Image 1 (tube, rainbow, N blue to C red):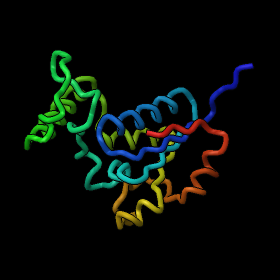
Image 2 (cartoon, one colour; image 1 turned 30 degrees about the vertical axis):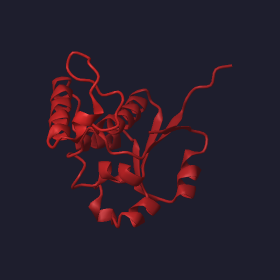
Image 3 (cartoon, rainbow, N blue to C red; image 1 turned 60 degrees about the horizontal axis):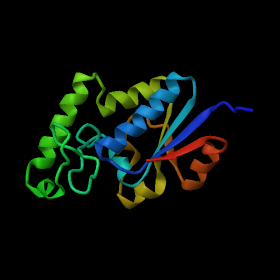
Length: 161
């Protein structure tokens, strides 16, 4: 007997564009399919919902084995340490995303919220990074402890990014 997926709980712990967009696309796709979606941002993932940082995220050029250069050639990690390379690669990625009409992070968060998706911050990570609720995305649905996250995630598919 097949069981229908009713809810996803997505944990986002990173702030590099490829991880962030994976989480946002999964949450938005779930909402478009009528599946409940909740995003839980922890550790460096808090940058995604920090007002000053959300639209200034970048691609990690060092230690990113999936990164390739135009034409599909592998991106040599050593090049990533050259000043300005990370900014250039991030700009190229954002330009490609614009061509595909992929919204900016702040717009994506608004779309998810407007469709009924929920967005939460991790209490412990906020304390670690000395963030206050007013530093974060205005439509944040709350700040949760890990225990509260598990309560909300009960019965859902948990996805860790």
